[in-house]
Every structure is written in C-alpha cells, then in structure tokens.
Length: 40
Image 1: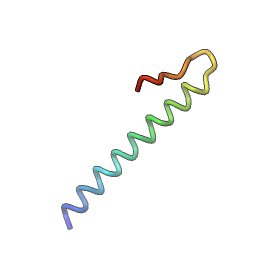
Image 2: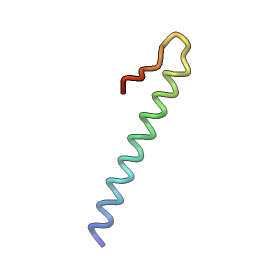
Image 3: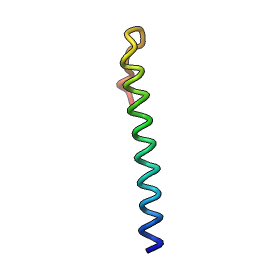
Image 4: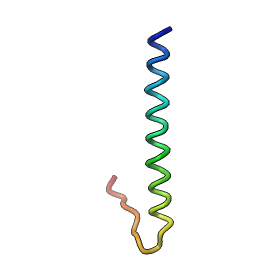
C-alpha cells in the first residue's frame, strides 16, 4: 500500500510540473512579441 502511495505522489508531482510547463508555454506563445521556444 505504501509503495502505491509513493508512486501516486510522484505521479501527482509530475502532473503538476507538466501542467505548469504547459501553462508557461501557452502564456509565452500568447504573447505576439515573444516567439515560442520550440527547442524544448
């Protein structure tokens, strides 16, 4: 049970990180003066 909980915690953290990254990308892409960085 503990192992599953730990995996779930990591999954949630990864999800939050990805969501934040995507949000930042959208914000930067929404700005006409700033070109979207497609390198990452």
